Amino acid sequence: MSGPEIISATDAGLTGCTQCGKVWPAGTARCGRCGSHLHPVDIRSLQRVWAWWWAGLIFYIPANLFPMLRTSTMFGTQENTIAGGAVELAQHGDWAVALIILMASVLIPIAKFIAIAYLAFTVRVPGQRGGRHLMLYDVVEFIGRWSMIDVFVVAILSSLVQLGFVATIHPGPAAVAFALSVAFTMLSAQSFDPRLIWRVPPTPDPEQPAPQVTRET
Amino acid sequence: MNAPLPPIEDLVACPHCDALHHLPSLGENERAFCARCGSLMVAPRARSFLQVLSLAFSAMILMAAAVFFPFLSISSHGFGHASSVFEVAMAFSDSWYAPLSLAVLMVIVALPALRFAGLIYTLWPLANGRPPWRHAAFVFRMVEESQPWSMAEIFVIGTAVALVKIGGLASISFGPAFWAFCCLIIVNVLKNAYMSKSAIWEAIGKG
Ligand SMILES: [Zn+2]
Ligand SMILES: [Zn+2]
Image 1 (cartoon, each protein chain N blue to C red):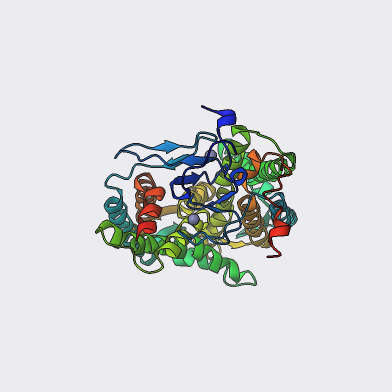
Image 2: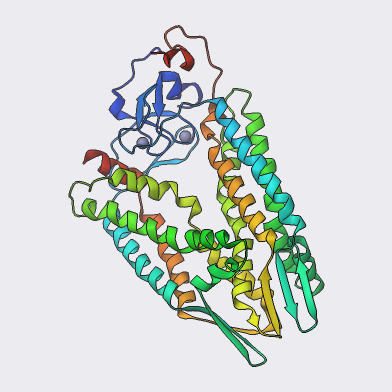
C-alpha cells in the first residue's frame, strides 16, 4: 500500500494544519483546533525562504571579517575572527577542538546555505521526490540552531575571563553579526514548506478553481 | 477522486508531506507513522500527561536554581571571578550590542522557562481529566512553535567549548547553577520522550 494509493490533502480539496494535523476544507483561514494559520501548499512561500536566506548570507560576511573576541593580556591585545580562533587552537596543538570549531562555525553554516538553496531550487519542479529531500530538510532544521553555540562561547568567555591584567576578554562585533546570520538562516529553514517536496503538478480542474478566483467571493 | 472520502473529522494530514490519512483508533502503546514520509504522527499516550507535568515542574525548579546560583568561577594568579548565568548573558551589555544580551537571556532562560510554564498550564487540567483551561490551544501552540528558539542545551555544550578555550590560562570551578543546567537538559530530554503532541492536541480539541 504505497505510492499511488496515498493522496495529498491538497489534491482532495482539503488543507491540513501544519501544526496539529487536523484537516479542513480548502480556503479555511485558521485551524479550529489549535488556531494556527492554515496555508495551502504554495510555491510562492519560497519567496520568504529566499528573503531570509539572503539576509542570513549578508550577515554571514561581517561575521567572518570582524573579530569575534578581543583578548587583552599582559603581552598586549589580540583580536580573533572565527577562523582565526580555530587556527590558533590548532597551533597550540588542540587539533581536535580546532577541527570541531571549524566544523561548527565555518563548514556547517556554509553547508546550511547550500542545503536550503538546493531544496528551494529543486522543489520548483513538481513531482514526488520522497524521503531524501525531507531528510536533508530535517538535518538543516535540527543543526541550524546549534550554530548559536559560538555566540554563547563568546558570552561565557567575556563574562568569565575578567582577570585584571592577567587576561580580559571582550566580545567583538562579529558576535552580533553571527547571531543575526544564524537567526535569519533558522527563519529561512522554518519558512520552507516541506510539503512542497511532494507537490504534484497542478491539474486544470474546473471543480477546484485557482486560489485567486476564490478570493473574489 | 474515485473513492468517496471518509468524514473530515476522521482525517489527518501529515504536517511534513501533506499525505492524507484515515486516523485509526490506536491501542495504549501503539504509534502511527506517515505512510509517505515516515514521520511520527500519533505517539503512545499511556500515562504521558502526568509524567510530562511532573517533569515540567522539576524543570521550573531547576531553572530557578540555574538563574540565582553562581554558574562558573575562574581563578588565576590571585585574581578570581565568578559569573552567574545572568552575568554571562550580560557580557554584551556594555556596548552598542546590548540587544544581543537580551536575546541571549531570552533563548537560554526566559523562553525555556516560559515553555515549561505553558506546558504546565496546558497539562494541569488535562492530567486531572478536566477540560482544558481557556486559551490552552494558543498556549500549547506557542510552546510548540517556539521550540527551535529555546537553546538551553546548546548553552551547556557552549560551556564545555569555552572551558577548552580557556585551557591552561586559569582554573575553573563549576557552581551549582552549572549542575542545575545539566539536570535541566536531562529533564528536558525525558519530557520530550514522554510527551505525545498528538494526544495533547486531541485532548485540547475535545474540551
Ligand atoms: Zn491545527
Ligand atoms: Zn508524511
